[in-house]
Image (cartoon, rainbow, N blue to C red; front, top):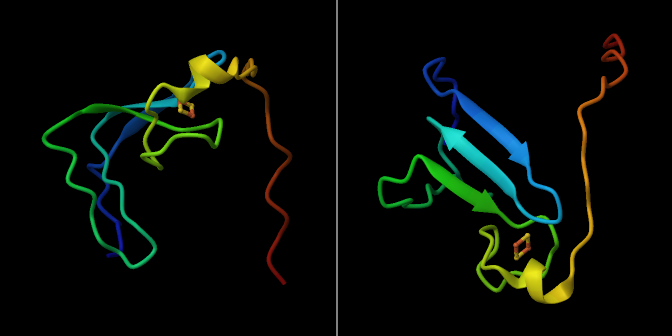
Length: 83
Ligand code: FES
């Protein structure tokens, strides 16, 4: 599935010592383009520690592991021009 819908807007929050929290209007697909059925959720957490048994979703394992990550906003370098 190709997602080109301009109405799909999402806020992504990398939580301290935890998952990526998605909030808004979004879809999540697998590599075959199949949509995950999110059961109507408009907020969901994606695993950032790599230990969830329900990837890509967070299942709380990061707490048991003591996952450490604190992210604060910064600017990426500009996209290099295409050749
Ligand atoms: S971030 Fe929560 S289980 Fe990985």
